[in-house]
Image 1 (cartoon, rainbow, N blue to C red):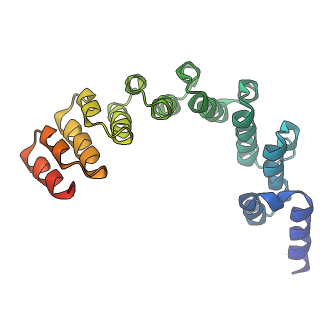
Image 2: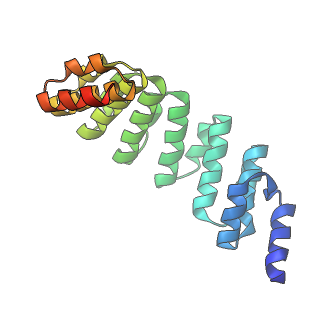
Image 3: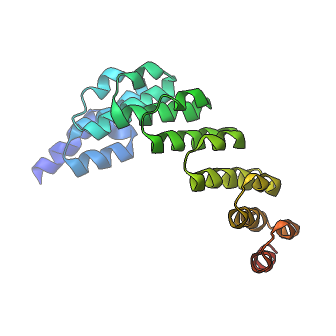
Length: 195
């Protein structure tokens, strides 16, 4: 029990008091170095991330600072998936589709395109996504966010297009939008839920 109180004292004295999630992570992993992440973010001090022993926590710390300082060079110090996640974070923040191009993992690249598209509200960016269902999800999300079912017409698969229109109608309680649905059953269902 004395060890627990000593550990909490170390956490509090290390600057962890500002970040409850960092305290919980430190207690869970029995590693006070995780507290450096919160302090590093607050101070925008990358050198504090180097004191973190957990690879995952250290990468997250670096991503936080890269995002808060808008500094791509921090991402370039990372490799593999860690680098991809960092670049994706900056690309979405900056709404910069070109940054997505440098991501190695195709799935992370697709998430990047989707994030930039959603953040900018531009469906043209959804077309860069390689997975057809993810591409449709991207278009659907933008149409729902913009309350514009006409955007759903960009979806070429009739069933997915109808589902998109239904989501817009139901989310925004626009029964008249249901008339754009071709499938009779789905249209009726939409009209019932959109009122």
